[in-house]
Amino acid sequence: MKKFSIAIDGPAGAGKSTIAKIIAQRLKIEYIDTGAMYRAITLKIIRNGTDINNIDEIIELLEKTDINFINGRVYLDGEDVSEEIRLPEIGKLVSQVAAIKEVREKLVAIQRDIAKNKSVIMDGRDIGTNVLKDAEIKIFLVASVEERAKRRYKELLEKGIEVSYDDIVKEIEKRDYIDSTREVNPLRKADDAIVVNNTNKTLEEVVEEILNIVCKKVEV
Ligand code: CDP
Ligand code: CDP
Image 1 (cartoon, rainbow, N blue to C red):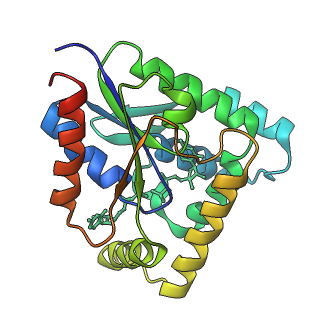
Image 2 (cartoon, rainbow, N blue to C red):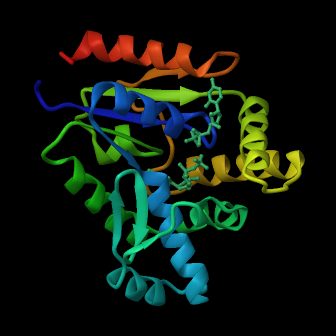
Image 3 (cartoon, rainbow, N blue to C red):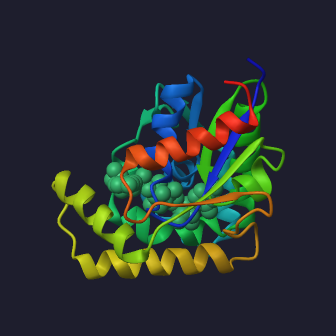
């Protein structure tokens, strides 16, 4: 099997990570959750008490930061932070952290390095437009704000995290706004990406739709 890359971009809660994980298992390739990396840096900034406007301190912090994926878990400086990075307080700040040029430079370099020698499926906001510009398959996954908020609400409730539905809608809208209007590599559909709509569809339907696209482009 020849090496290939799949890029999945789209707004918050569109289903990127859930779908990318399933596809990675089916195709036996590696899944890289770039959002988790931005969340991990955000966690470090919060723990350290760093002001997100203090770029010098952030640069210093970045130099001492190590982010790793092992068996689908996210490690920040050797500590498994997979659960903690999903907390709402991280979600509230992450888009502001992800708009910092130096943060993006560091994480994009790590992402490209992981994808260098193996087939991957990588999800985020700027994968098809920037990180893996030459990806063989580019998907832009969308879903209505209401559907995304409903799914996120259910997911948090199942984890025992109480939040109001209205707050989730507000957070998603705010994050989408910051992500698509920032100067450095904003959320945008790559010209050669295929739009897949994940509103009113089951996960299995969308997985099949994407696998069909993949099979037409590469030999799996
Ligand atoms: O909550 P959700 O799973 O939608 O978001 P995420 O994929 O965990 O990403 C969290 C945040 O990281 C996004 O809202 C973006 O601000 C940022 N991000 C980014 O800027 N570029 C990426 N390639 C991935 C995430
Ligand atoms: O990664 P992204 O922020 O795009 O979304 P996610 O973290 O995968 O969250 C999507 C949520 O919606 C998950 O709880 C999925 O199980 C659920 N879901 C979906 O993604 N697609 C459907 N067709 C149905 C449910």
